Length: 180
Image (cartoon, rainbow, N blue to C red):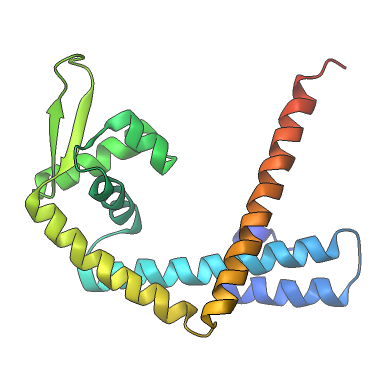
């Protein structure tokens, strides 16, 4: 049997249908999981490709700049890595390259010489604004097959899914804490 992590996008779609044809425990949940994963992978791959082709940048760089764009006063590196859910080392490498390109600046804080605050430069804000506009257009294009009402409904239902996942994770955490 093929490992789910190594499946191509086409294989994910095939796996969805295989689950429909071969009933076993948790069939509906697994089909839903694969559908969500397929949609995410398709969209993310296209966004990565377009960012690379049009702006010669990567999705992690775009994500980091998006975080800083919203924080006009900048952010501490630790806060940035926490928001991006990546290690401090990953953020530091991205920051170093963006500083070299003049898109962001780094300043050591006065209260803690070990902490660095990063913020976008005027050039960085201008470059990111162009990328963000294109990104918004791409997302709109990809979701354009859904009516506004369908998009709102899907957004709402996915919010319910998010709540369900968080509840399951909290319950799992509580079970690990209970003495056996």
